[in-house]
Length: 363
Ligand code: FNR
Image 1 (cartoon, rainbow, N blue to C red):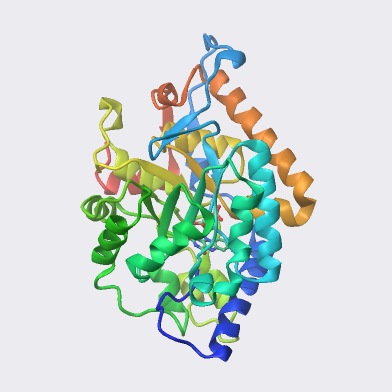
Image 2: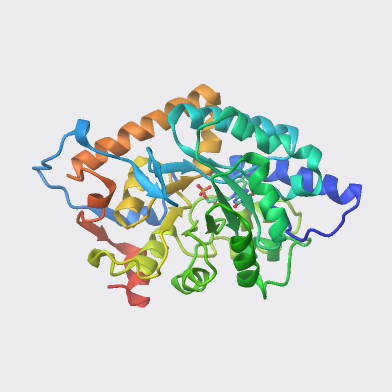
């Protein structure tokens, strides 16, 4: 992400933006703890000894923005715009193409300002010509620039990231969020592809999603807390670490799903929008947990980035294939022949998440 104003900037400012991209990447990897407990641990399933399913007939595909995705998880937005991040995007896109998973690029603001940096994003479409690819901007870009971001990579959908918490802890970040919903509505009206509004690791409340439903967006990704934490990352970038007390701000994807989709057993989507989930997803069981709670698809950033850095492209390819197999295995174990049926499995929510859900009045 970038501080989102599109006003003209000098070379020093442009350089600072580029090195922030590289720093975010390094810190996200360094601070990533794959096995750290989080709210997904509060979700478990009743085991039934007669699943009545077979792995061969289990359909793990899902529908997102009018498209059928063969795999119900995706590589979520991360990066692009510098030579280091272009190399990461190349590897991510190759692995995505190999596994048939959808892939988002990171914020394209840097390339909208400096078109010579666009190649670091275009590599995604080049390496994954048939993938479902998501472009990424913030709400402060003009509708014309949002359209340019989509065209830059031949995107199938556009993610608009809302990152107020991150902007506020960055000294150079935005401070005025008054018209974000109107800006999102203008972007949505201007681009020819579906728009998905996403958080960046602090969660979307039911109330926020209800406001977004009035802007014409096609879906939301709650991108909750418990995984990559941009307040911690921003604190690490500064000697004073001014906002260290804000670490952990926001709500988990699990709580967001419970809050926004309560009543899902009637087949309704009370917030009026399809909901995707991400934030703190560590393994295939977390994917299946989020799908069972009603997510249409599940995004992963930190874990796949860490896998790529530690084990290279072949390691990430292996990981994506293993996750695909395991999602199928877990659905078979749960007696769910498809993602729709997975939402009807017996889910138990305990601990801190159950307590918060009770306070929010979730049935
Ligand atoms: C991100 N994320 C992100 N999101 C976005 O919409 N635009 C962006 O440019 C970025 N940049 C970015 C860089 C890096 C290095 C990481 C790890 C993440 C946020 C990401 O898409 C996701 O919402 C959060 O990371 C939470 O998911 P994980 O990491 O816990 O799986």
